[in-house]
Image (cartoon, rainbow, N blue to C red; front, side):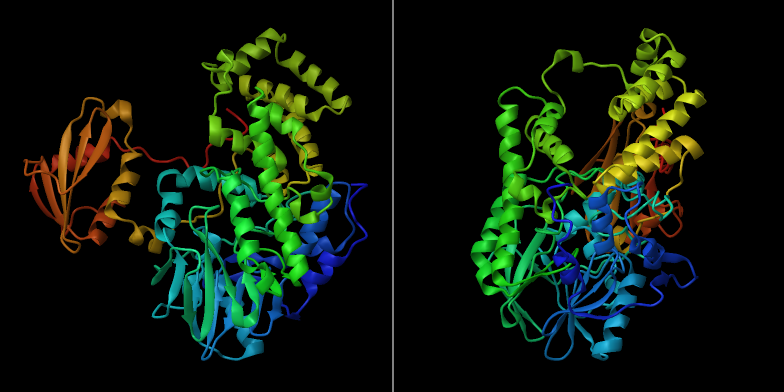
Length: 597
């Protein structure tokens, strides 16, 4: 921390620039009174940094906790601090265009209401989704019911829907840890997530786009506002764009005020660091000299052409450096863990606050790059067929002389301030014997100390959530990101994909059946065949007799798979085939253990 410009208040001045008004109180509720956002709970951040927080992360949390309506430039406004992301509003000829309408409809409606209280009752005349994550579209029905242009990058719907179809329960479970949703908001608990404070837990929605942005240089005009787009290759579906008439550049998530995560701790496909850097270089070439302000879906804007170029160049260099140094070292035989210890950002980048790992980190981004190129196996045959964690833990504890001996070793490493190895030892002790209270309590203490010392907010949250699970048991997820709009928007193929991953393979080994599904409203025919424990689907199958044929609408299909029964569905053939299929379906476990076996 000694080399960092702690005296520099420039970011605080920029974060406060253009402030108009706060939402007071900054508490947002559902129609039935459930609190889904409470930014006032972070008021403790007004104080000095405590010993239980890393000073750099405390500073970032103070900046992210600012909330209210801000003027970015003439005719461009942002509402910040009312969800994980920002909602940007661009005034057009007859109304206002909403960019990235937050996660929850309730938060988006509150943000729009705050804007209108100070800028008038302008109708929403367009919507832009810059990215396919829920923080950029989930609140859309809080600002419009449709009937307006909705622009999104090509592939938006596919990627927006795919996140939760196959691994939704696991992602949500891990997101609870990543964002620390069950932690108290306090100097010892959750102090944000680096990218913002946390995510709201209200009503998620989606309205399909009316127009796709598929190429760089594409121009669109909505309500008299001309926009020039860049199709970003650094993410599954993302775009940046310039508003030439306002000399304003929307960076989406391509460049934010922290190091982003190439592989979120909650899980996701690995993003391409090299493509990310090249995209930012293209952004500089296309737009930097044509903009006086750059704003993004998170954090605060950057003003001035020189500062915009410098900011983008440093972000570009950071991702390029991480990518190239990881490949340089893996080609010298280093493993992911070894590279993560070896790579350090250049001093000029380290001195820039916005390259710090508040959300992503050098350590886990390097490991993500390694994974993208070489996968999970580091080439050492000892790691090719290891025992699973619990079985390995039992053997390690036996070799070390039992649970009490492991705890004693861990205490020694704790006194030497080697908390990392103490955590490894105690993790073995807990996995070998969940009833070892001494080991559990000590591991909770180690996780707490690691969390309080972490500059990375998502690491802090994971450590503190782990301590909470050890102390209090499994913490039930408070967020349900299920969304009727999302399920209704799934293709029939995706619906059957979601069914296939629920088949309990061993239970279905000896079952064979075929069901034809005629979707009368879509004019589609699908066949699902259960064979050797796998559910195989075909579109427009050959004219072969199936065990059961069902004629139904897509809505009836969704209802049927939700347990509503076959009432109103035309059935031909052996109806027991459906019961046999349902009998081999498993249910996801939304609250599985993470730090205990």
